[in-house]
Image 1 (cartoon, rainbow, N blue to C red):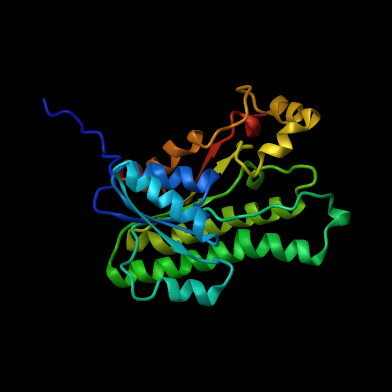
Image 2: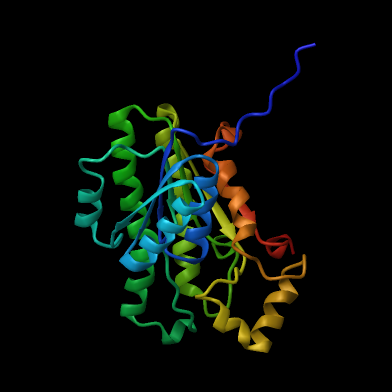
Length: 254
């Protein structure tokens, strides 16, 4: 009997780019791809963070380099993708949040959140795709969204706007790119404890309100996202495009 063969989760011979990769979620996802055999480029604005992170990945026996890149600078993004081999995998991870009630939101707040979370993600993906198309690469785009791209939340009007928009953008990307063998998906996490979010969880009332909605009873860790990223980057998800993997402990099921 010829048994079915499990598709490979390996990424040997593939090049991957992770934005916002100096720490937290971005670093964890870069590690996941590198451990699976990809040659990973870690991009962020802070040189020291990504250089140290790439060095640590190499010290663990994997392939990684670093690139200083401000993804909100469309000119710098275009230049970054010029004159280098195209990537097989993109993880659009750079993002920000300015939580406040809608009546306190300023135009500067709006521009900061929407420009990084949506505009930068769009033009990074566009530049990456142009290079992939020119090279004839069939690959995978992975955008880090949020459970707040599927539900609403208090003090999250800007963040929700950007992440809901990312979900729609992702679906349209998937339709444009399907004829070229390039897939596009999002990962939508719940609250994840990182160096950036840890101070918020020191507020016991806030922590309790979050835990009340995460049905599995704990705040997420960056490790909870690594498997989802590896799945979407690899041949194991060859028929998956235009959708979202919601890693939320049951938050949106209620």
